[in-house]
Length: 84
Image (cartoon, rainbow, N blue to C red):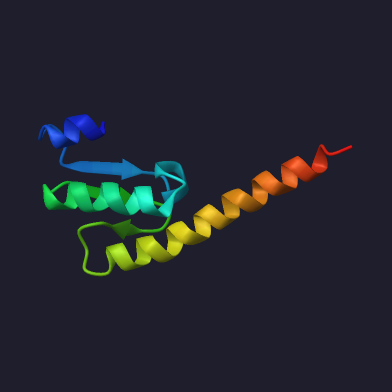
Protein backbone atom coordinates (compact mmCIF):
# COMPACT_ATOMS: atom_id res chain seq x y z
CA UNK A 1 0.00 0.00 0.00
CA UNK A 2 2.83 2.37 0.82
CA UNK A 3 4.43 1.68 -2.55
CA UNK A 4 1.14 2.45 -4.33
CA UNK A 5 0.88 5.70 -2.39
CA UNK A 6 4.43 6.59 -3.40
CA UNK A 7 3.48 5.93 -7.03
CA UNK A 8 0.53 8.31 -6.75
CA UNK A 9 -2.16 5.64 -6.97
CA UNK A 10 -3.46 6.19 -3.42
CA UNK A 11 -4.17 9.60 -1.89
CA UNK A 12 -5.79 8.57 1.42
CA UNK A 13 -5.00 5.68 3.73
CA UNK A 14 -7.68 4.84 6.27
CA UNK A 15 -6.53 2.82 9.26
CA UNK A 16 -8.40 1.63 12.33
CA UNK A 17 -5.89 2.97 14.85
CA UNK A 18 -2.33 4.09 15.37
CA UNK A 19 -1.56 0.72 16.96
CA UNK A 20 -2.65 -1.06 13.76
CA UNK A 21 -0.53 1.19 11.53
CA UNK A 22 2.79 0.67 13.33
CA UNK A 23 4.04 0.04 16.84
CA UNK A 24 7.15 2.20 16.70
CA UNK A 25 6.80 5.97 17.07
CA UNK A 26 9.84 6.66 14.90
CA UNK A 27 8.54 4.49 12.06
CA UNK A 28 5.10 6.08 12.25
CA UNK A 29 6.50 9.60 12.06
CA UNK A 30 8.90 8.77 9.22
CA UNK A 31 6.14 7.22 7.10
CA UNK A 32 3.62 9.95 7.93
CA UNK A 33 6.09 12.71 7.01
CA UNK A 34 7.11 11.00 3.80
CA UNK A 35 3.52 10.51 2.67
CA UNK A 36 2.45 13.98 3.81
CA UNK A 37 5.22 15.48 1.64
CA UNK A 38 3.70 13.80 -1.42
CA UNK A 39 0.14 14.76 -0.46
CA UNK A 40 -1.05 11.41 0.90
CA UNK A 41 -3.30 11.66 3.94
CA UNK A 42 -3.45 8.99 6.63
CA UNK A 43 -6.65 8.94 8.66
CA UNK A 44 -6.61 7.17 12.03
CA UNK A 45 -10.24 6.34 12.71
CA UNK A 46 -10.16 5.45 16.43
CA UNK A 47 -8.13 8.53 17.38
CA UNK A 48 -9.88 10.80 14.86
CA UNK A 49 -6.58 12.12 13.51
CA UNK A 50 -5.74 13.23 10.00
CA UNK A 51 -2.07 13.61 9.16
CA UNK A 52 -2.87 16.61 6.98
CA UNK A 53 -4.44 18.57 9.85
CA UNK A 54 -2.45 21.22 11.67
CA UNK A 55 -2.10 19.36 14.95
CA UNK A 56 -2.17 15.85 13.46
CA UNK A 57 1.54 15.15 13.83
CA UNK A 58 1.67 16.37 17.43
CA UNK A 59 -1.31 14.23 18.43
CA UNK A 60 0.13 11.31 16.50
CA UNK A 61 3.44 11.59 18.37
CA UNK A 62 1.78 11.61 21.78
CA UNK A 63 -0.73 8.86 21.05
CA UNK A 64 1.76 6.61 19.26
CA UNK A 65 3.97 6.75 22.35
CA UNK A 66 1.02 5.60 24.44
CA UNK A 67 0.23 2.84 21.94
CA UNK A 68 3.82 1.63 22.04
CA UNK A 69 3.84 1.53 25.84
CA UNK A 70 0.51 -0.29 25.90
CA UNK A 71 1.85 -2.89 23.48
CA UNK A 72 4.91 -3.40 25.68
CA UNK A 73 2.76 -3.80 28.79
CA UNK A 74 0.55 -6.39 27.13
CA UNK A 75 3.61 -8.30 25.96
CA UNK A 76 5.18 -8.19 29.43
CA UNK A 77 1.95 -9.40 31.03
CA UNK A 78 1.68 -12.32 28.63
CA UNK A 79 5.31 -13.30 29.23
CA UNK A 80 4.84 -13.07 33.00
CA UNK A 81 1.76 -15.27 32.80
CA UNK A 82 3.76 -18.09 31.19
CA UNK A 83 6.85 -17.95 33.42
CA UNK A 84 7.34 -21.09 35.56
